[in-house]
Amino acid sequence: MSQRPARVGTPQASGQVFTLPNLISFVRLLGVPVFLYLLLVAQADVAAIVVLAVGGTTDWVDGWVARRLRQVSRLGELLDPFVDRLYILATLVAFTVREVVPWQFTVALLAREVLLLGSLGTLRRYGYGPPPVHYVGKTATFLLLTAFPVLLLAQAVPATVFSAAGWSLAWWGLTLYWVAGAMYVVQARRLVRAARAR
Image 1: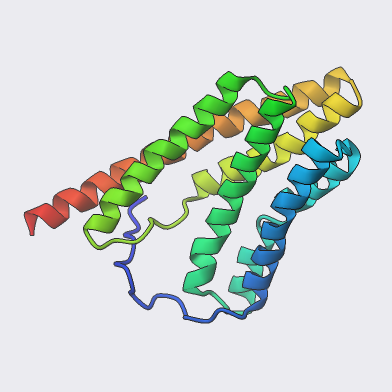
Image 2: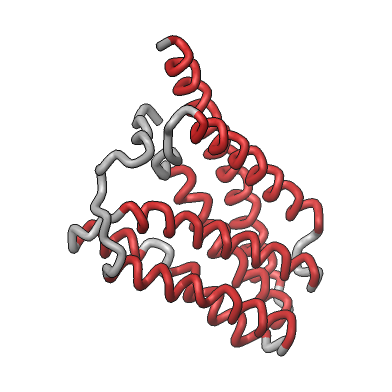
């Protein structure tokens, strides 16, 4: 976690917009309202599971393609984690409404997002952009985006194995999500202290 986030505008990545990784992220972004419609309006749970599973399992695709094709862009660095968080938040809201997850679980995840937003706002005031995505955060996101379709599947096809697997992934994901959040806060605090010292 010693990697230092770049100051806003630092050209560590290209300014390209129309790249294949960004296209993949935009397609994933379009999947969010589709999922919400299928789950909350049409109540087509099987189709919603498919959309959610595709959105979750392709989480790593845009980053892998960006590195493979050397198409890392500043837009992509912001868009990828934004889409991840939007998937998680939209799914949490929908799952809470459908009573797939208890409201306490939703509050625990939302509280972490509020904490992180506060840290990002502080970094911005000192001229820093968002900290680089840490592997702990990526692992937490992967676990949560894997847990959600499994939990929904447990609702559609009642089976102890699906429920147990889904909640195991969800609780591990929540734990690592908070660990990653704490790491980001510590990093932000160090940067702010260094900036004030200068």
